[in-house]
Amino acid sequence: DLSAVLSTIPDDRKRALIVGHNPGLENLLLYLADVADSYYRDWKLLTTGTIAVLDMPDNWQQLEKKCARLVDLVRGKDCP
Image (cartoon, rainbow, N blue to C red; front, side, top):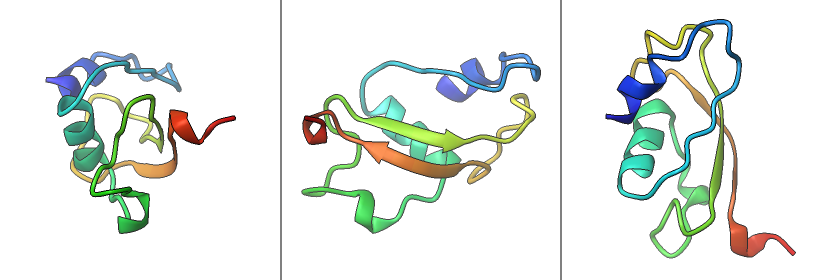
């Protein structure tokens, strides 16, 4: 469970990077943040090479549903 992994991060750490595959990462993103329809392309959210940037709460041990804010979603194929 990816949220369980995040909950092990000490509170003094301000950033985390998770690399993986779907459906786990997309499910985690949808649990942590509201995602506007405008982020979907061809009915997909996290396509290959996509980076989701989230503004996370300070306490990693209490990650509740919709506790984060989606700051940006960058798809690899959109980069030059």
